[in-house]
Image (tube, rainbow, N blue to C red; front, side):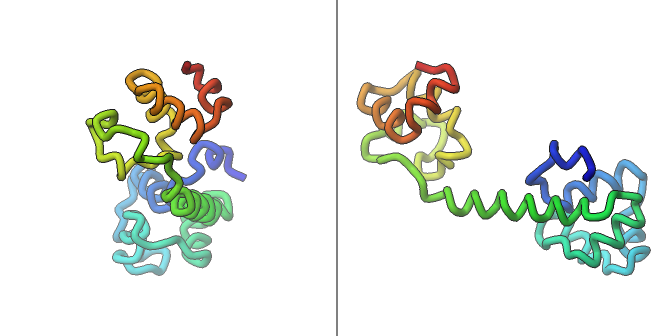
Length: 151
C-alpha cells in the first residue's frame, strides 16, 4: 500500500487526484477524456460532490502510475470518517450547564464536541465556572483531560 495513505486517511480521493494532476501538470478536462470519463464527472469527484468508483479509480491509477487501489482506499477511509462524523454529531454535554458566553466566538449549538475536544476542554478549564468544569470532566472523562495535560 502507498505509504502516503497513512498520512492522508480521510481525505477525499478527489482532493488527492487534484493534487496529483497539478503535480504532473495535467489539465483536468483532457485528462478526464483520456481515461474515458466526462470532464464534469471528474470535476464533481475533485470537488468532493461525487464518490470515486472502482472502474474509474483503476483507470486513473493506471494512467497516473499510482498503486492499484490507492483511490478506493482513500474513498473508503473518507466514507468512514464521514460516517463517524454523522454518528457523533449528536453527542454533546448538558448544554444547560454551559454558558453561551463561554463560547463567545461561535454558536454553542454548532460545536462538534468530539472533533473539537481539545479546544472545548482548554476553553472551559481556562474560563469556565466550577459547574462548567465539572460538566466537561464528566462528559470527556478525567483521562481525556489529563491526556491533554490540562487541569
